Amino acid sequence: MSAIYKREMRAYFTSPIGYIFIAIFFLANGALFSYLTLQAGSSSDISSYFMMLLFLFIILIPLLTMKLFTEERKQKTEQLLLTAPISLMDMVGAKFFAAYTMFAGTFLSATILNLIPYIIYCEDTNLASILGNIVGILLIGGAFVAIGMFISALTENQFVAGILTIAIIAGLLFISFANSYISFAPLRVVLSWISIFSRFYDFTYGILNIASLIYYASIMFVFVFLTVRVYENRRWN
Image (cartoon, rainbow, N blue to C red):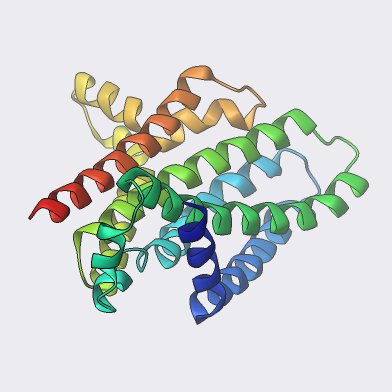
């Protein structure tokens, strides 16, 4: 597992993808943080910053995941993975953790750099809210990475994988906004239950909701499991 993890991490920095992801993330993250917090000078804007950051993931997460498996098929190295002396769960898990490491490392680095001056100069900083937002973003990011990885396993084309991942992430984020236009109450309840935003609200107040933790962890597990199943079928077919 560690060999595949190191190979994937190395691949991010021997191709432009890793550098493009980091550059765009730092640039967009810094601009967003400055606009929503430092100019306003209010700690209440810190949650707005984290919530708006989620919309950046619509473009950024697919950059990390679209080549995870499509590249293997393109370079004809997929059979090496399928015949390697390692379980499919370990193989898929290594790829997931590599993509998640890139995401989490970049997010934490950029956010810490932004928060240091904010905490120093803002008098009414709510550390519980900041911590809750960070934990929530890390969980949502993990869920999106797992979804993107699963989509990458379904197609040979990086562009198709990227577009499908963008569509799914955007759909999950915009479900909450659709609720206000739906009159059928049972459907609103269902959409609210699966909404990324509705489960993120508690984190913005510094509340670590166990149900939400389980929800995001379940998404990660389900899509990692589905990716393993895709490769189980390929191994035997």
